[in-house]
Amino acid sequence: MSDIPGIVVNGASGRMGRMLVNLVSENPACRLAGALERPGHEWVGLDVGTAMGKPAIGVTVTDDPLEAMKDAQGVIDFTAPAATVALAEIAAQARAVHVIGTTGLDEDDLSKLEAAARHAVIVRAGNMSFGVNLLTKLTETVSKALDMEFDIEIVEAHHKHKVDAPSGTALMLGEAAAEGRGLRLDKVADRGRDGITGEREEGHIGFSAIRGGDIVGEHDVIFAGPGERIILRHVATDRAIFGRGAVKAALWGMGQKPGSYDMMDVLGL
Ligand SMILES: NC(=O)C1=CN([C@@H]2O[C@H](COP(=O)(O)OP(=O)(O)OC[C@H]3O[C@@H](n4cnc5c(N)ncnc54)[C@H](O)[C@@H]3O)[C@@H](O)[C@H]2O)C=CC1
Ligand SMILES: O=C(O)C1=N[C@H](C(=O)O)C[C@H](O)C1
Image (tube, rainbow, N blue to C red; front, side):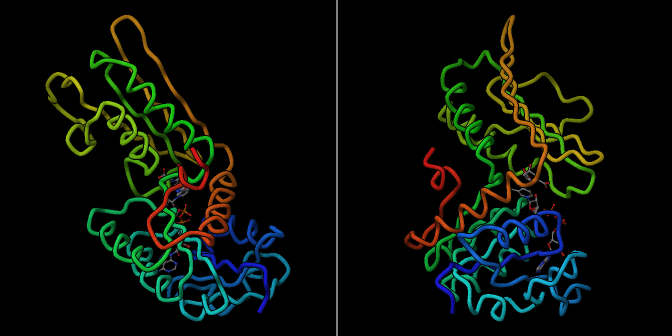
């Protein structure tokens, strides 16, 4: 047993998973304690370094979460909603901090995560980067300062492999914009306009999603008023910004009481 905190990466072969295997292995403040993939995945049973086409690093990919977490204090999870909900219960049993980057979670998924957070630390955010969390703060501030004459529209762009829309980040920004106006996003969100939609309703918050190529992630919050527009923008050019935030969240979470936290808590924003 080492004194250095151990972190497991779930979804180790994914775009974020590979990034995280590297970031956790290279960070002197933690060690890679395990690598998880879904049952049947071709990486299961291989050394995760070898599977990535690099030298072996002494961690074998497994599909058994309890086995992966036997010597870990945290697990970082950028996978898919069903996988994340299933892992939450197991991470709580193992008393491991569960850092969740997975997006596309529905209300039912979220209530299951809340239940798991009664026994364990969960840190979840639709975007783990410092820049987007700062943008989220700014969005709330600007929304609070402007009156309803300013229409709020959120436009996001991502790579062609992304499976959920609007992005988790867009929803985070929408929630902040609604909060700034003292409203609940689910009462004012316009998602997916098509056909004869009628005029825009005052106070609504609109979402548009672009998908193509290898776009890492881009978000604009547009405040369109009479005679002027304010646009807040974040452009991600490297997935490492999400990965670094997730590692920070895992280490931070190890000092917290059970409960649900987000990146604002981690970053003190
Ligand atoms: N919050 C944030 O800052 C960010 C969130 N994301 C989100 O993270 C998620 C993953 O994104 P990508 O890495 O681009 O996707 P990806 O499709 O490249 O990777 C997902 C991985 O999860 C694995 N997986 C699926 N079911 C599993 C299970 N039951 N057990 C273990 N592994 C399982 C897949 O085999 C795959 O390797 C998405 O929901 C995405 O929106 C992505 C980037 C940043
Ligand atoms: O799927 C992605 O790639 C990303 N997903 C997150 C989201 O849904 O907002 C964060 C980031 O934009 C990349």
